[in-house]
Image (cartoon, rainbow over all chains, first blue to last red; front, top):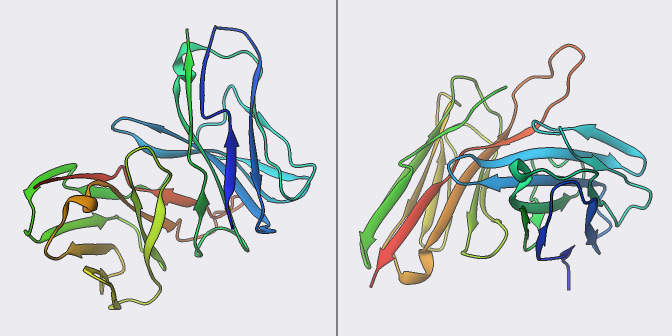
Length: 114
Length: 116
């Protein structure tokens, strides 16, 4: 089954404790992206990747890091989480550039930073 | 950056009613995408529009690419309880700025509640 898998789905952590949210897709997609969703603000892009070893900042990259060492995986790293990073996070993937075709989203990871 | 303005922000309707929502921008878009997010899930693509004036249906859903290329509409006919969710419009930013790159932008969403 074609899917984008995120882990963990739910996480409560404390300020400053490094964490990684993993994302894996089994569709051989070139494009992958991370979004955060906050009430009233919709979906905002954090980082995206056009292919292996190619990553770029989205609209709200501060406080986040990503890597794309393999085509299928695109982890999101919070080196020193802060309460303003409490949010619902989505990973997505797509063929091509990810601009005009269908984006496939994971089920989301709800992060709470105390 | 470029913005997509969705309205209304939320809607409360009775089962069986028709629904209409729209998305506008001050800039021209060459593609309009409509996504739906069910409660507790990630968004899923409903309809993609690639040509000005295009009218596309997907079951009870109909979407139109505005002739000015600055807006798009999504209509749902005869709503049912499973239509509940958040509907997002999205599109690639229209032009590659000098030194920049195109990005996909999302509207803030229209939250739909359907009362049985």
